[in-house]
Image 1: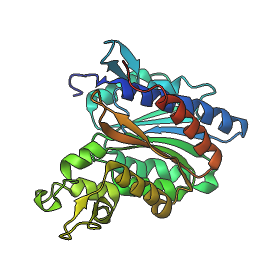
Image 2 (image 1 turned 120 degrees about the vertical axis):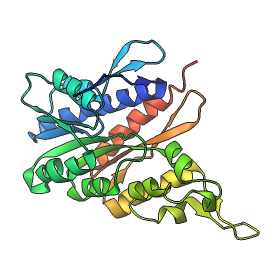
Image 3 (image 1 turned 180 degrees about the horizontal axis):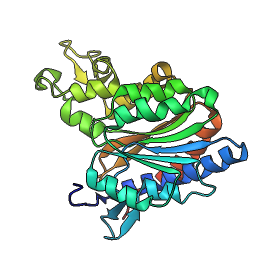
Image 4 (image 1 turned 30 degrees about the vertical axis):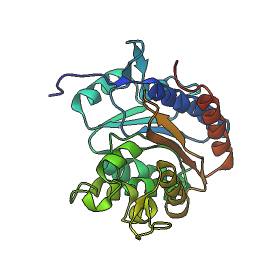
Amino acid sequence: MAGVLEFDEIGYWSEVKLEIIRDYASAYSRILNSKNLPHVYIDAFAGAGQHISKSSGEFVPGSPLNALNVKPPFSEYHFIDLNAARVENLQRIAKGRNDVSVYDGDCNEILINKIFPMLKFESYRRALCLLDPYGLNLRWKVIFQAGQLGTIDMFLNFPVMGMNRTALWRNPDKVPKGLDIGMTNFWGDESWRKEAYSTTGNLFGLPEKESNEVVAEAFRNRLKKVAGFKRVAEPLPMRNSNGATVYYLFFASQVGVAENIVTDIFKRHIRRGSPQ
């Protein structure tokens, strides 16, 4: 039984994120279509397919709806969500389309076991993958595999506010046992502790928490050096109504032209600033 469908209310910067992904998806599909390469759109935390704007109260197309309207179209679309009501709505949106697959389950397993195996380099298939998790419930193995395949362009929500709430406390010794497991799963190992804390310049040699920017840059390096993405754009900070950074929007690819396109899109949107 699907239960009651509740649409997410989203703020200004979430609407900006949807515009960014839509703009890049359009450019990506044009380029891949010109090369006659089959290209796939993947949304691992697809939601219901649409949202409600906090500012206007009106419906806003989500990533799945935006992707389905891209011209020229993608070869295939893969939408995943854990919530049965959201999955049912995605199935309604995709009704009658044989190029759309909707999955009800954990994207960490579905991506690794069902979708990524279709995207090996020798398949000549390419993919644009959106990883926009609810909190820290994304596993590093997914990010790593996406980089290793060499066929995926990836947008990634790096949820720094959730990390600060569960793991990146000013005093790491006070973090309750087990609360930081999500951080380790997302990062892939315990090396985040070394990146997030420093004893340099501390008179007593006690660990001091690094800034959000330092942690994000460390993860950017990890995407390159460990996951194997050749090009990782400088991430875009996404803020709440108080101006605090909630997460960083990362983009990773294997080709310079993709990074250049996204960097231009990021610059165009960040110049808009926050709503008055």
